[in-house]
Length: 613
Image (cartoon, rainbow, N blue to C red; front, side, top):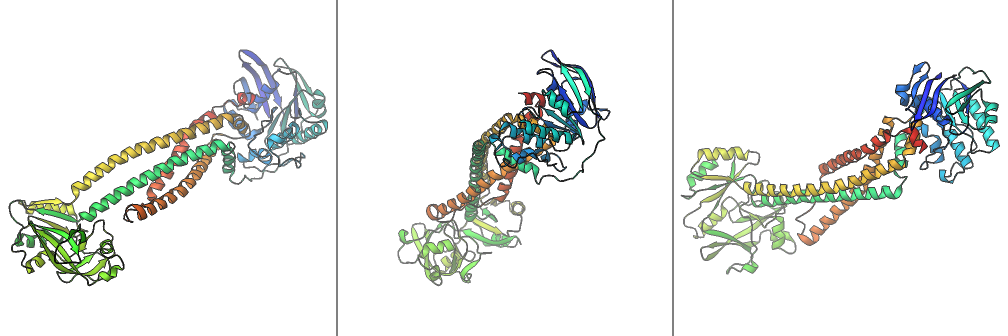
């Protein structure tokens, strides 16, 4: 089955193996003996495919496997190492079942009297106990079992037991043993090769090899193998992993809170501008003449127009109060917006205005006017004050309704140009002089398209999108702020990713022997890649769990702070789930990229040299 053809090996310009040729059977117990330093272990590593730096050829079932040693080792070879190389961060049973992480076939359990210590940690085991664990780990069925001093740490009773188990194994596969104990080898082995100074000096045939007996092949893989193994690996250095997770979590929390606040502040600013200047309005200005009735009627003839509000040249609205007679600024509530239309508003109580002297007030304005129950405002008489040149003029109105909306500035709603009609009725206004007005259009219409149409039809008037320049300026400013925030956020994430990369690379360096053992037990590139993916999922999952718990709590606390202390509930932070999804994807990709350097380092390890070191 296995044939070595003119194998030669040099190490530091010294010949370790010199023209070795061997032809080994399909089954049987083969012993290799010789003094220390004669090349026995090196020869065993070449047989197992973990030492690739040699000349000559290695044949398996008549086919050369020199160019595919990794695949050959993964599929056909199992090991018992001289230094055992148990993985300290796995339990005894996980060490024994380690091949199951990388193969589908069921593990073949062998009795080796470990019941008395199987729940202990590896570090608490004696050398003999570790030897038994290493033997059980190698009982995973492959065609070839290579043993480097498998009984060197056992007493005579356990030595004979292990040798008998190896003898039983040799009925199903080829077992090759390297040992100094010639008496033991002669008692149990079928063939003996004696080495000296890198050469085979003697070959003794004691028994004929038996026909190979294949054991039943049961497909039963360990449940979620890579998740289990990656979790053990990740938390093998708990303090380091905890520091890495906390560092990354703090960076993500800072980024999430920063971006959430910037987006919410921008949204609040835009809403504030919209509350002052509706986005579905266009201002019209006339430089040389007043806006006359005929022009207003022509504008109303457009189906897009819902309302036109005029601003009188010499009149300024000062606010509303409950007392008439003499104007007192301290008892007057300043109204920031008295021109807003009341279409599409939801009433909290009352009704819509039917007369010119009837008004609606917003919910927030009603609270400012009435300390107790705001419904008491319904039907109350209020005085709306206007300033004309040096005179202050009151107009009597009645509150007939309260809307559900909360406005940034105090607002009341009237019928279209109602205040002009009221001023006329009081004989205060003789002639209408207005060089500016606001055209409210249907929110479903394209404002830009209608604006271009107005400019084309009425070139003598100036039409401007209300709030457009302000919105543009604010958007430009917020974009610059966002860029700065993104830069600082990127620096925070990069610093945490550097920490993750450093920790993961250090883990690989400290566990390089463990990964070399995994390679010998069948782990390939895809297995290590799956381990990396699972570690990434676990790191990101734990970090995001911490982040979201803290993030939602901070959002809640911020909202309580804004509501009770800063701005009386007008400002609030809302959770942007699209931002959360982006953070999750970005975190996974970046942590995965941080794992690539350790993965490359892991795959480039020289297995034989690593196990010797």
